[in-house]
Amino acid sequence: MKPKTIYLVLCFVGAVLPYWQFVPWLMQHGMNLPLFSRELFANRISPFFGMDVLVSALVLIVVMRVESARLNIPRRWLPVLGLLTVGVSLCLPLFLYLRESRLEEVR
Image (cartoon, rainbow, N blue to C red; front, side, top):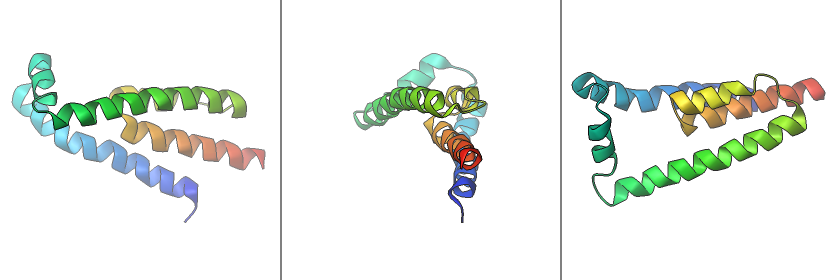
């Protein structure tokens, strides 16, 4: 299987799995941001994962900016939208998909 296809499948997985957990919570509590924040930092291990994801998102933004400029990747705003609406789990494979598509064009 080509990397481009794998990245596309991972985009789907990266969008579905987080929302599979978030949508039931949202249906039960609505957009209760204080509760969301309390539950996100409910114990000592939760912030570990939260901070890991935040740092990963920051690093990913830097990498995407550098690589997008270097390779002149079109639609470079799509992974940023994925980051803001889902998270790193969608953003990273989407960026890799766009990058692989661009590399195929260049070859």
